[in-house]
Length: 447
Image (cartoon, rainbow, N blue to C red; front, side):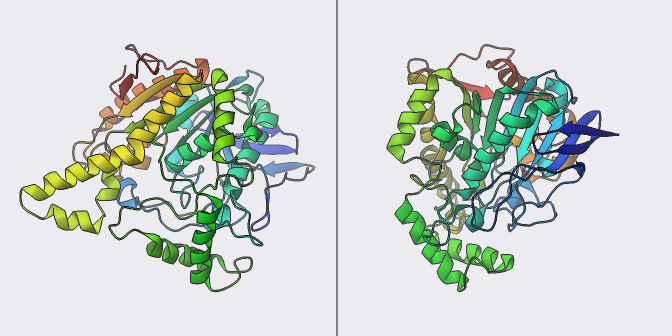
């Protein structure tokens, strides 16, 4: 069954999927290579929104050994599109969740099955918007004369503006928008918190596994660009996509630390460039905005286990009898604290002290046969996609399908309560996080 929604640019035609209405490949902006996003010109007639658009050009994700093989799909630079999942196209003004996917600013897409929003939309009666944006050098190269940088962040801002102007046509409320993200997506949300250009585009945020080392200065970004351009060996404005992706891989290998602990991506947001203020102005913007914000923020118990599992130095150490595994576990805990734990606590405290309502969590569930424990990305299957979509993922090895559904419903219930009302819907008390009461709830055992 086909359903139509009239936006400021024209009419989009979506279809019913499993009792919900889904619009796929909805273009929120367009751009030239290394150019800023710009509005899509208005059109007459109808445009089809029953098939996914291209995703940003990318290689397989670096955590494929944890989340499973990446989905195959069309890749292309014309990737600025949305997937909108809604219970109905009417004037009910439902709460809206805008999802910004992770993937180290190098991989992923909001339109992948793993990010399917059917369960959230059905169980919570909310509208879910998943964003595709530019990645890697095409989204974050900082090289004077070629690209200013932060184009991926500019894409996300353009998507949020589009949602503000058009989501009512899909049954959503533009005044009740929650922006959520995981990993690089959470870092993107962190950037948005202090951006003047993001003012008025959302009122709630969910930050899942925000990494510490995902931002650079203009000088550091230009050094990274120099390494990439040296590997590319040709003009990036005209290079083939395959050449750009190959050069990204080669540059990343050369930029890694000698011990292999540099898990930060090469192309990331750059402070003081484009829509992202420098650190001082970002801090001021965050403090000014905090009193009107509701926030959920947290990590998984063993964020770094997925990364440590492929670290060659640790793998050699792990083979030493008795002491080796214990030493590796100690290193993992320390790096986990530095890369995720402490930065998350610092941001939660900063937001709370500035006047935001904050709830903090740690995701502790580990599948029975998963060697990585409650690792990076373990929270995602309980929010997005289906059991069939995630069943082959090593991070869920040995999980019973009934447990998958039970635990998932607990997590979604908490998140959906927050999206609707600004307070997590938990069956047991989940106190707010404050400087005096730094309560960190265990999820999914929360309700």
